[in-house]
Amino acid sequence: QVQLVESGGDSVQAGGSLKLSCAVSGYFFNNYYMGWFRQAPGKEREGVAASGVGFGGETTYADPVKGRFTISKDNAAKTIYLQMNDLEPEDTTMYYCAATTAVVVWPLSASDYHHWGQGTQVTVSS
Image (cartoon, rainbow, N blue to C red):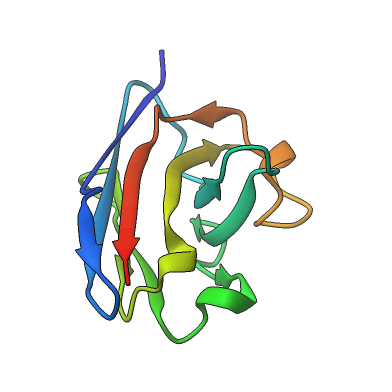
């Protein structure tokens, strides 16, 4: 059974930084996509950043986070990270890690992912 466990969420002031981690346990293929998503209450889950592991390693970022967030991964440890710099109050919400072994149509589309973590809260105060 595949499990994803996020950590690293916290409360910071605007302009600060956080690093989220997502550890994957259980059987998993060598080629898969992992991504970070966020969802505010009453809103749809939106993709933040995604990376293909074995699928060429390409990364994709949502426009609001380009230049501020960086996704990285440790293949051997099956862990993916999201370094978040220059945080803004608008970044406040729950962040979720997701994974899939399927070839995704759009890496930031939540519907393309089949495994999800429980989420970690990020709060940015002004």
